[in-house]
Image (cartoon, rainbow, N blue to C red; front, top):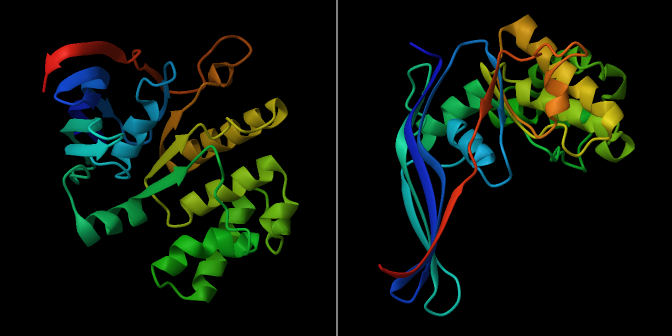
Length: 257
């Protein structure tokens, strides 16, 4: 059994004008995919093809099975529809609910985003320790674990600084340390180098590769920085590059709802 199993996942967005569908956009159309334990995989594709949507579904931040309707202007509506299933190591992340779902995510999945989302009022050590303290781990144990994670990302000397005093690359390393504090088995990184200067992109990517190799951490990376994925000789630095197709867009102004 694959570590992650994605089966027949669909996601469609529609806009409705009165009783007629005005437009329809399908970003994921029956996607099925297996990810092996310890794999480092990059998801690439054009803007709007569903890369971040897929990542959020895998991590449980977005539900797979859904039908949501939002009123936009007067009689206009927008609908979001989805179906399919996702499991992580046999756990049905796409159908689990409530505390069971939240506990699984907290213990098994780490997230890194383009923006680091650090808390300005907390120092680096407390930012990293926060996920453990949310689990009601003692402050002493959480700080000890945070110290170790900061050592691994080479920021132990900055533990007492506030985020405002760090560079962009340092902030992203803190975000990675925070994502890994609970020792997750899966790390989901959505454009983790997107907001960094070119000189810093490589160091963050190499840190993710190092963690993947040393911990057998499964890493799924969404990126537009395709030059990071190969070395100077053109050899791939990741186990697999998964290409998502451009979203299908249709104008359906004469279609009855």
